Amino acid sequence: MGTEAMSWAPAELDLSRPNAARMYDYFLGGSHNFAADRQAADAVLAVAPHVADAARANREFLRRSVRYALQQGIRQFIDLGSGIPTVGNVHDIAHSVNADARVLYVDVEPVAVAHARALLGVDPRVDVIQADICFPDSIFNNPATQRLIDLGRPVAILFVSVLHFIPGDVNAIVEPFRAAASPGSALVISHATSGAATSQTEEVQRLYQRTPTPLQLRTAAEVETLFGHFHMVPASSTATSPTSGAPLVPVAEWRPEPDDQVETRQSVASPFLNAFLAGMGRKGVADHG
Ligand SMILES: C[S@@+](CC[C@H](N)C(=O)[O-])C[C@H]1O[C@@H](n2cnc3c(N)ncnc32)[C@H](O)[C@@H]1O
Image (cartoon, rainbow, N blue to C red; front, side):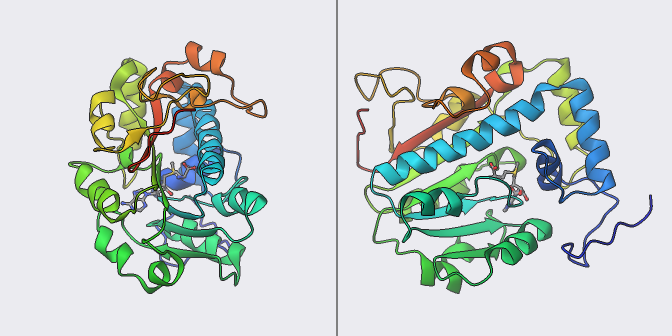
């Protein structure tokens, strides 16, 4: 494979190895990916074409969850595993509703961080740090976090499509964020689960083994425990009580909106969309609608 020197690519990149962040960028139609990423992503799409819909549906869930948090008066966002900036980044969504909203992006992948830095320029309301979320203290102690985020006020903590790239006990990662968040804060998680485990899923997992972050599917029950004692926000805006309906639903079915591209009915037809679950919990607040 020839080298693909790109002005936006940090020098230390291993271009020969596919990377989940850049494969996701490719699924979403982005251009911050290399031949190895595209080949791996095309191999995934060949066995599981719905993975591209799942990526889009996840991105739409992110948008709806950020809007919902803003409607609840939350003005600060920590986006963990934020990815390569694309259409509908958290600060774009947040600032379209509240120009004062603050957003901290965190990712371990150099292209994601370099591109975010270039895109953001100098904006006192937004920052990006390169950090591994497996070490929450490195995020809390980072000067950018301390400048931007006031943990004494409600914050939305976003673990959107990231925890399934991390092996082992991910509650040890989420718990410090739950503990540090003040009442009114929101915890947002989307996670690929093992609900639809088929030979297709196994093949997708095998393809991700080539990346530095193989896929770690968990059960819906395991993902639910990550919300701890947070109150689950009803996934349907028509639910009548906080306990009605399942706490986690497929990403396309969490409070769908008319401007969604991936529709709920597509979700029913796709094992990948069906097993890609999402939810939001609030600390000390039971949202009823
Ligand atoms: C599929 S992308 C999701 C991007 C975005 N959150 C979204 O849902 O659109 C997963 C991101 O998680 C990042 N990631 C994976 N493991 C990580 C870790 N241990 N610490 C920080 N970021 C991580 C990857 O680099 C990638 O950018």
